[in-house]
Image: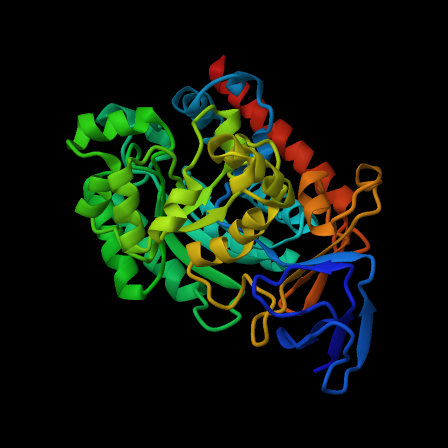
Length: 455
């Protein structure tokens, strides 16, 4: 296997305390050496890459997304609404998804993430109407084609509007079908080994879209198969009220009741926890994925990142769906997370280094990965490299701070599992213009289907 020295970066953040100013050495899919300032690798190398114009980070890790929502960005009927009303506007549209739309939505989201420096993404796909029963299989194929490392979650909805839930009946499945397909997907695709490119987790959508019985059975299946659990929780006050009215529990009490309060669970949003709940979440080793842009767009609130971390929870970062963020740009979320958390805690208590930690180590812990999230010897070669050569960086001084504060939006180079997937700011082996054209056509077709149903 060829050995490459990524040499003398302009700036580097490894997530550890190692001096890596001389760069890093990659062999195959693994980092084999950290090079200190002013030194060279201790082993022979085949290639060098001059990184003197690059800020180098561990590959960013997106711990929560909905790839299919790239097809409904800035959708007119869903504008200027908060979560429950926003969902009710979009569920009937998403019910028209077909396999081609799923393929193109996943490819487009994966491409957008890679271009933003993201090397690993978790997608939460829970909407499986008739005809889209193999949605996760399609995602496996699409993300492997793009070269993105993934934790694909088999989501589910079983509690329809007529049963007191939120989703329309034609968007839900029977609980037996959900469990059977969950087991099938784990057996066919889950790669738990070091360096696995595709992993499967189980992810009922939320307490307001599945039954208590399904939450419990999903936890049982996940434990049997040693896979992670994921769901939305405490995103809005409406959700808290729903849990109190339907189950007689606050959301964290409900989580414990159904067997989810442990370190194989991570939660999307996690905004409305009280102090006692934060203590319990930390003691249980729960992960929380902070989704700043989505939380601002839907006016859901601000996650309590620092208290959660202090209690022992892992805090990661996610873009959330492209219909509640209207983008899939993870490096942009570093800036959003820094600023919204400063709004909560003050400027002196939140820095760009916190954002780096959330988007790498924190997200890796969220999704149960110990082989990514830092640039360290023995870790996977997932690397994001950014130039500061665009106009917004002119006059900037500290490169790592400038990456976040000046608003970077696009990586120059991205390596996943030792392979370059982005070079010179463009995707490798992907015709981006063709993908965009097909994706736009699919988005229009989905909108047309929704309009026809309304007539």
